Amino acid sequence: MSNVRQRTVIKVFRKYSHSLGPEALEYLEDILDSHEIPDHDVEYAIEWIAKEYNKQDDAPMKVSLEVLKRVYEVFQNADNGDDEGADVVDPESHLFYIDAFSMPLWNWSQEKSAFEQSSSIPTVSGSADSRVMAMRNRLNVIKQTVLRNDHFSPSTLPSRDREHLLTLRSTKQLLGRAGERFLLFGMLAHSKEGKLCLEDEDGRVELDFSQLDQPSEGLFTEGCFALIEGDYTEDATLVVIAIGHPPCESRDTARSIYGHVDFLGQGATTLLEDAQLSERVRVDLADLRFFVLSDVWLDMPETFIGIRKMFDHCVENVFIPKVIVLCGNFTSHGIAQGNSREIRRYQESFDALADLTSSYPAIARYTHFVFVPGPLDITANSVLPRRPLLSTFVSRLKSRVPKVHFATNPCRLKFFDQEIVIFREDLMARMLRNLVGVKPDVRNDDLKRYLVQTLLDQSHLVPLTTSIQPVLSDYDHALRLYPLPTTVVLADRYDRYQMTYEGCHVFNPGSFIGNSFGFSAYIPSRRESEECVLGMHGEDEY
Image 1 (cartoon, rainbow, N blue to C red):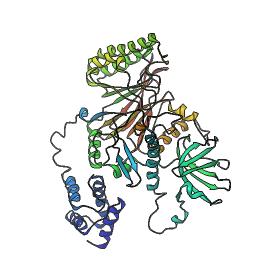
Image 2 (cartoon, rainbow, N blue to C red; image 1 turned 30 degrees about the vertical axis):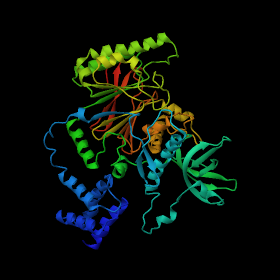
Image 3 (tube, rainbow, N blue to C red; image 1 turned 90 degrees about the vertical axis):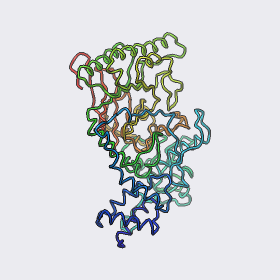
Image 4 (cartoon, rainbow, N blue to C red; image 1 turned 180 degrees about the vertical axis):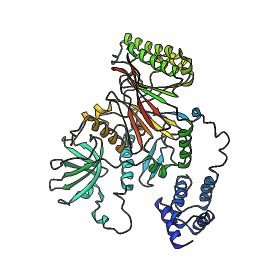
């Protein structure tokens, strides 16, 4: 192997923290020669092998020839043995429902710079250690993506740009260095004296926003993690000159590094397998749809009119959705504790929905129904993640609708290679109520974009402190958005919207009842959503 090709191969594996011995290097040379790979394509070809090697559970840092051979054989056999039945795609065998309490917990290990599966059994009560670990995981998951970003991880080669890069510092490095400029990363929080500070693992520093002209885009709340550039003063205060959210890492980048980690507990897949599954969905399931409805107020007669109209439309057009997600609230108002009459009406409304659904056999047999509770619904707990609807209220639905699933809030659907997060919370109002430091003066459309950007940049569905939004510490990972999902449903009473940010499609179906019956249809083949409207008296927009 020429020196140039050899250096290229070594460089690619070094990027994934692996070193090559002479035997492994010779084996890779034979692979390149056997496929007649030219010099300018060596890096691209070896990149695939290095990524797959990195995902193997038993892959040591010094590249093992045995594991390397196994990885290559997988590539060689990837196109073989899949032809039988390739013309038949069964979506049922690739559709999984993951509730928040069944997701495995992966903690970030700073010593190993990798995710480690927790060996302890999670509990609803949690512990002091788990509360600390939950917040530490939030910090470290984001921090490791920041340090991997090109702006914070410059090339090892000398360049002029390196002179202008700011290095990420810790709060402990501020001491005795008044008058200097620093770039810090930490969580926005209030001190005991009520002053806004930035906290990291080493301490905290008070923030002064008086010199800040314009923050970067996004919503900054107590509990958010932020990158802050500022000047440290004699008063032990950081005068902020710039503040921004951490950069978002794409799903493909995260999967290329942690593809061997089974975050959902449904079995890890390789990037190659994901690409093959994605193509099958795009070609063979182009007409498949998931319907998503929110604020399905079953105590309102109009709701049943709208659902019946939706079912009629599906049957008449022979267009049966594979999944219908029904998000709460399932009542238009809260139910007072101990009000037996309201509780009885609540149960009767679910019974009526069961009768209505079973009267459409084609839909009841084919469609999966997923019920996600809202803030006003009756569940076993009121903090996040929330348990499913109590079984006593939905017994008739269970008996009359074969494919019904009562999910947690949030929950996830895994469909082929896609991960779809469903979350029902009035999040826009909650975020705006808890803004700190800098408050944007923006239009409505910008607020929607800011909300989406904030959640995905923060890699968490609720980037707030637990004093604002209580979360079960042992299950905080169920609200994590890392790696970035394919799709996020933010069911909110706020205005409807749909947008794609860093390859992740996010949409809000809005309330089902209004001037019309509105909901969203998600198209897995395009990874996009469409707004659907069933007019109460006029024409439908489907």
